[in-house]
Amino acid sequence: MAAPCAEMEPAAPPPSPPPPPPAAAAPGSAGLVCAQGRNLRAVLCQRCGSRVLLPGAATFARRELLLPAMRKKAAAAAAAGGGGDVLREHWLVRDMFSFENVGFTRDVGNVKFLVCADCEAGPIGWHCLDDKDSFYVALERVAHE
Image 1: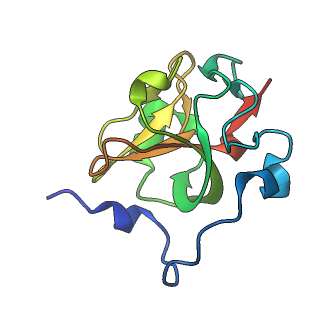
Image 2 (image 1 turned 90 degrees about the vertical axis):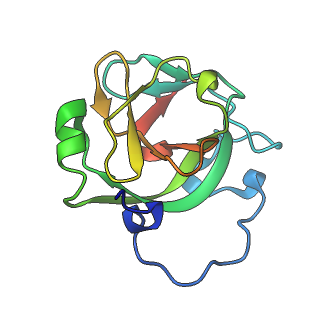
């Protein structure tokens, strides 16, 4: 039986109030979010520069997600049960066809991790199989132009 997505997220207190408007986003996202909360710049792979998302294709979102340390696709899937980084700022993509270039790891419980389709560096993001319309790309794991 697959693990529920909640098991992939760090333990957290009860849900907090909604995040502030995107225009008042955290310092790491300054200059990346427009007034409508969408990405102003293209999203690129940090390693090879491949374009992952076009400007305007994603919405800024805050959610604590545990992502394994950056490595190639096979190693990322194998290490998913180990440690990693708790990341809080993401680009939320509602349609998988909005991506210009992204790959997915094999299922890790009820989650697939997003990787660069060209160089397989990642994970750059997270997708729970229970929610077909939510793909999260961590701001700290990608570059912007």
